[in-house]
Length: 420
Ligand SMILES: *Cc1c(COP(=O)(O)O)cnc(C)c1O
Image 1 (spheres, protein in one colour):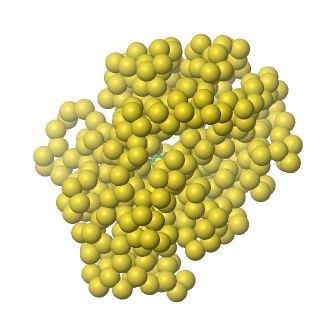
Image 2 (image 1 turned 135 degrees about the horizontal axis):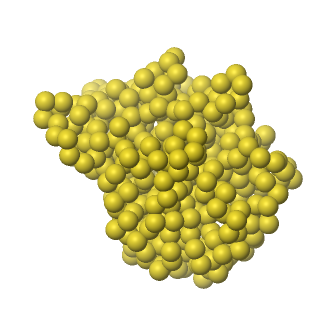
């Protein structure tokens, strides 16, 4: 949001080092304060935690498995000298096919406990819209999803899914008609209807307290992975790897490992056609420090501060910003951010499908594509026989159109699912 700015007191939890905060119009401050109170008081309460954990188990399908990936391990390092074990945290097996439901079900439950009667959300590829529409259907709350006009056209299957779930999809025709414009419109709606409406943000981005709230709703991924790995191998991993769009699945799996100094953390951004071109979504790798959607972080912008439209083959990584906690993890050196290109991600989808029997989302495939670079970094740091955990953020059914078009052009049909 580019309007007025009133940063939160840096002594508050809204800052991660110099990043984060609350750069929003004055009219939104009371709503964010109300949400912050709910985050501090309702969210940790025993009654909220019991209901939310119960839903994660009985509705989302948690805990998700930790799967050993032996055939990919052999492909990456036949000798086992560099990589002794590879594990996948299976968020692709969550209800609706990705980690996003962990966040949506938690936020909509919070909204219900706050007495809100209406839920709004923004969506790019439609995955967060589907997750929010799912949670709203479950709780019986009306749901309106803002989506850029361009995305409505290129993500038709998810638009149909949201409608089937009873949500109203509002096509946004301003700006570049994509995710950032949908987010601006959702904020505008929220300013107008703040008393009755809850804004369900889809990633660990946005003004305080969203980055902290979303992290805490996704950290269940890392909590489970840490306990599962300890029970299988008896030790912590050498590295945890996740793809980064806005940063929610990555911060969710990183969070419980941040204090374990021996565990290296790797985030993988979308390198699109290459980070040396202007067609990518590698915000941390190539962006600049700036303010987008209410928080200070890295953004993709030109010399005049205009947001550059990002590009990625995976619609879920196609965001010109990134959550502020990742900006701080990069600044402090605690986490390392790499990128993988469209072509590398496509190749990784094929490898994992053929070698493990798992059809990955294109977003997730970026983290697998970066594994050779992750291993190089671990070896350079003096590790050997590493144990690596990759977060499988989602499944690839939604990407079949793109996959057919790009990997098997001769057999592509003009059916549903094409991403562009
Ligand atoms: C949306 C999405 C992402 C990217 O979002 P984050 O907030 O960075 O996690 C990654 N993987 C899948 C499968 C997604 O749907």
